[in-house]
Length: 356
Image 1 (tube, rainbow, N blue to C red):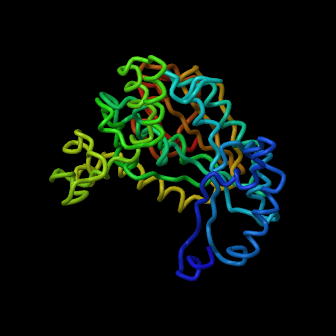
Image 2 (cartoon, rainbow, N blue to C red; image 1 turned 135 degrees about the vertical axis):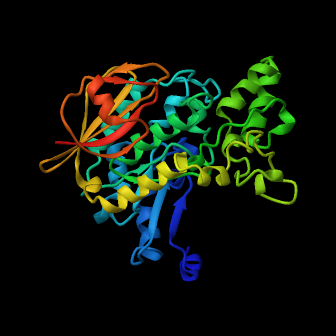
Image 3 (cartoon, rainbow, N blue to C red; image 1 turned 90 degrees about the vertical axis):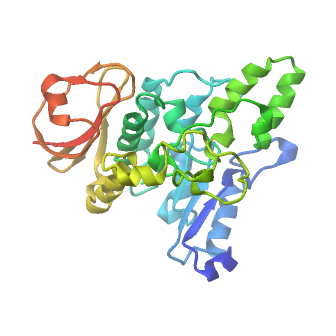
């Protein structure tokens, strides 16, 4: 780590860091008794006195455990990646390949509310993310990557980026890249997917059922080449890429996104700008609003100022029982003023407004 610090890097992302204190003989895998002493030792011997960002991947973290990692007084890490919301992709108590076919929006609201209210500003810090190199594309598994691809991608972005925490944008997320339509196993490179397929075939699971799971939840979905333009291999390489480029690259690529002022990319760009210009996003209180089941809405309160974030996470119209006068619109993928007047959300409507 010191070698790379001397090279001038800006920080470290630590893979499954909650496993470094494991005790194999006692079947302790996560959160072993030496985990935090090891992290403190690492901190003191490497980045502790440097201006670096450090984030740890911690699948087993709770808000209380996250405070141990990220409390500034604890001298461990800047923040954590916790995965409680991501686990809603899987059927409870089942292997990951038994994926959940529908997003439980009520449970999603419950999980985010817990992390937003129980992990405070002074004693810890969280990260905000939907995608990474191990996960399917959010617009495909929880959004609608067909008729509402752009709108649902914007809805997930707006919903997440205005919470408390540090947002992360994974490559391709900012242009709405989708899962890959895997048809055969020879298109798959991910060792986890291939091991699952081999074991499932031995148990007599039909190949089409296996491929369905890989198409929805497999890790290669996040690893296909970045889609830059309409040229061969989407401008990623003049050689043969390790994984095939998604066949939709001629419609979904960076060049196309930059040319369209209403693209997903510019929603992300505006969200980054909003976070840089509005310090209330760091400390403002979080209050979950009671809404229709498929509607996720919350208030960020900063003194006398009230900002309402609303997202319809469905393909259907939803009622919006939130009254009041809109003072200003921070960001929207619809016309927020009209939504307030009608109290009806169209599919995947999302916005943040300051209330007067």
